Amino acid sequence: MTNKMLKIERLLAVSALAGVIAAGTSWARAPFTDEELAEQKAALVESIALGYDLWHGSRADMTTNGLACGNCHPDTAASNPQTFPKYMTMYGKVIPFREMVNWCIENPQAGTRLDVDGDDMTAMEAYAFYLHRGKEITPGLASEQTTPIVVEYGTGFARTPTGIGVDTKP
Amino acid sequence: MSDIVDHSRRQFLSFAGKAGLTTFVAQAVGINLGMVDIVRAQTGKRGVEPFRFAIISDSHLYSMPDHKFDQQLADAVAQVNAMTPLPDFVLYGGDVAQNGTEDQLVKGSKILKDLKMPLKIIPGEHDWYLDMGDAWRGLFGDETWSFNHKGVHFIGLNSILVRDFWTGAGMTPLERMTVMEMLESPIPGPWGVHEKQLEWLANDVKDLAPDTPIVVFTHSPLWDYYPRWNFQTSDAPEIREILSKFDNVMSYHGHVHQTLFNRIGNMSSVAALSTSWPWPYPPVELAFPETRMNRADPSIATDGMGTQIIDLSGSFEGLVQYQPFEDSLTPFMRDGFKV
Ligand SMILES: [Fe+2]
Ligand SMILES: [Fe+2]
Image (cartoon, rainbow over all chains, first blue to last red; front, side, top):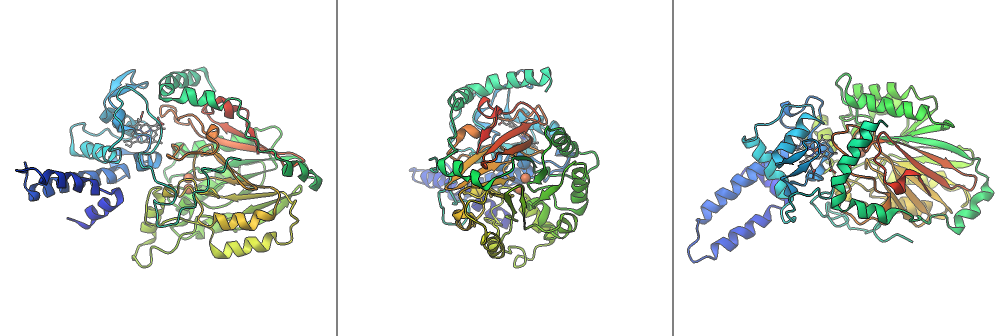
C-alpha cells in the first residue's frame, strides 16, 4: 500500500472496512480469501483517495475559474449523495448523483463535465458515499445542508474539547 | 432583487422546505434573542455617540482577470457605499485572497480603495501562508491594532497563527499554502492568536474602565464552533478571560461564510457573510439556531453572500443587519437582531 493510501485511510478512518472483512472470515468457507479481500479493500481505498484528490482540484479541466468542489463542500458537506436520485429544480426532473456532480462542474466551476461512466466519476462518488456511510437513504428528498462527519468538539484535532458554544444560551 | 430571483428561490425552497426548513423557520419567528440585559442597559453612562460601521469579508480573489469573485467584492463595496447613513468605517474580516499571492492581495486592495470610508482589516489564513504575511503587511500594515471611535474601543487580532508544521516536513511555501487553503485539512491543527498577541491584548486593555464598550475583531470565531474546519480560535478562552472585566464585549468575525450568532458570558459573537461562497452549517447544535440563514441555491451564483452593517446605540447596543446579495435570510433574520 502506498503512503498516500495509508494517509487517506487515516484521514477517513477507513478502519470500518476492516470490520467487514473480519465478519467475512467467520464464515465456514469464506467467499474470498483474506488476500482477495485485502486487494478489494485496497482497490476501494484507491478510488476513494482519487475521489478525495478530484474533489480538491486535482483535475484541471473540471474548472476554469480555479474553484474545486472542496471550496464549497468541505468534507463533501451539503452534497448529500445518499439522497439521490432526486428531483432537482435546475433540471425540473429526477436526476442521479452523477448528473448533479456534472452540474456543479459546469456551473459554479465553469468546467468540462466528466464522463459519467469513467473511473474519475466513480471516484467522485466513492469519496462522497464513503463519507456518508451509515446515513439514511432518503431518495426523492432534499436533505440537510450539512456535513456527514459529526465531530464532537475538538476531536477533529488533538485538543481537549471545551464544549463551549452548545450550552451557552442564557 | 429581481422577480426572477425571487421566483427561483421560491421554487428551490419548495423542495428545501420538505427537509424541515419550514418547521425551522416557524420556530424562529418571534424568538427574542434576549441579549439586552441589565448590565448592558447601564453602560449608557459611558456616552457612546451612536454610529454605524460595516463589515465586508472573505472575498477569496483568484488571479484570473475578470473572475466572478472580483465583481462580487466590487458589488459589496458598492453596497456599502450606498448605505444611508454611510458607515463611519469598514472592517474587513480576512481572506481577501484565495492563494495568498501578491497579485490577488493587490487586486483586493485596489477594489477596496473604492470605499468612501476608512478601512480596518485583519488577515485570514488564505492571505497569509505563502509568504507569512509579507505581502499583506506591505499593503495593509499591522495585523494587530486598536483604536477608539466615538467612545468605543476597537481591537483587531490575527487569529490564524498555527504552530510550524512546514519546516520539519521540508515543505515549500506553496505546499504550506496549499495545506492551509483546505478547510478540512487536519495537518495544521487548530489556529489562534498566540502568546505575543495575548500579552499585547492584556496590555492594551489594562487601563480601560470596565464600562468601556469593546469591539474585538478576528478572522475566526472566539468560541469552539467546529474545530475540524477551524471554526474556532484555540486561545479564545484566554482572550475571553482578558476581556472578562468589561461589562460588554462584541466579537465580530469572518471565516465561516454564513450568518451566525453566539453568546458566552459578557461576549456576543457575530459572524460575517462572505462575498465569494456560502458554507453549509456543520453538524453542531447551536445555542441560537434561529440565526442560521437559508440553504444557498447553487443556481444563483451570489446566493448566501453579502455584507453587514452594525448600528451602535448610545447604550452600546448593536443592531446587526445582514445585507445579502439575494434573499437568503430567514424571516427571523430579515429585520436584523440586537446584540
Ligand atoms: Fe474564507
Ligand atoms: Fe478563512
